[in-house]
Image 1 (cartoon, one colour):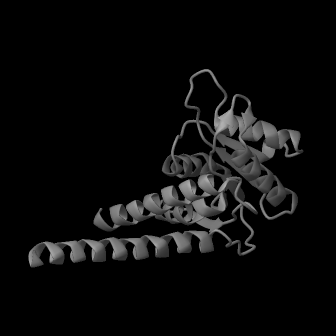
Image 2 (cartoon, rainbow, N blue to C red):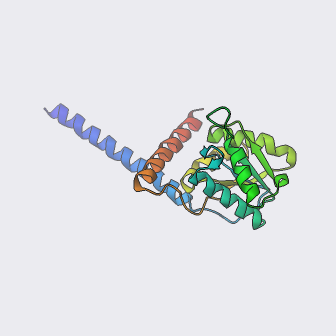
Image 3 (cartoon, one colour):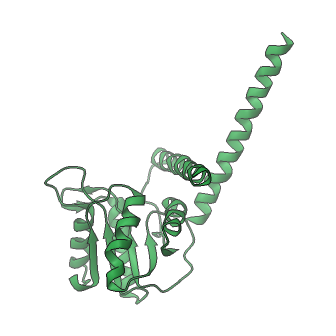
Length: 199
C-alpha cells in the first residue's frame, strides 16, 4: 500500500539521520580526546575509575600515571583524586589513586582525595568544594580520551576553570570494548546536551 511504503521510507530516513547525527557526535568525541593544549594549572583533577580492592584497574592506573607525570613536569602543583566505592568496607577509588601516586613519589601534602562520589558530575562537584579552600581554581582534567569531551563540558557548567589533559591512549584494548565505551559516551554526551538545553 502506498501509505505503508511512505511510512517505511520515512522510518528509514529517520534512522539514517539519527545514524549520521550520532556518528558526527562520536567523531567529535574521538577528535576532542586528542586535545591537550599544554596549559599549566593549579591541580590535576583525576576522574574516578574502577579499583580492584586496593589496586587500580588498568583504566584507572593510566589516569594516575598521567597525573603523576603532570606533577613531575611542573604543570600542576596538586593532584586531586576523586571517586568513592561501590562496596562498603573497601578503599575508595580516590584512596587507591592517592596510594598509587604516593608510591610513585608524589608527596601526600600535594594530594587531595574526594571519597564519596560515584558519577562524573559528582567527581567534579565534590572536587571543587574540596579543593577551593586550598586556593585551587584552575584544573587539568585527567581521564580517558573518549570521556574528555563530556567531562570538560560538565566541569565548565559547574563553574570550574577546566582544561583537557587526556591519557595518552585508551586502556580499552579490544575492538568490542572500544565500541561499547564510545557508544556509551556518545549516548551520555548527547543526553547531557539535551538535558542542559531543556533545563
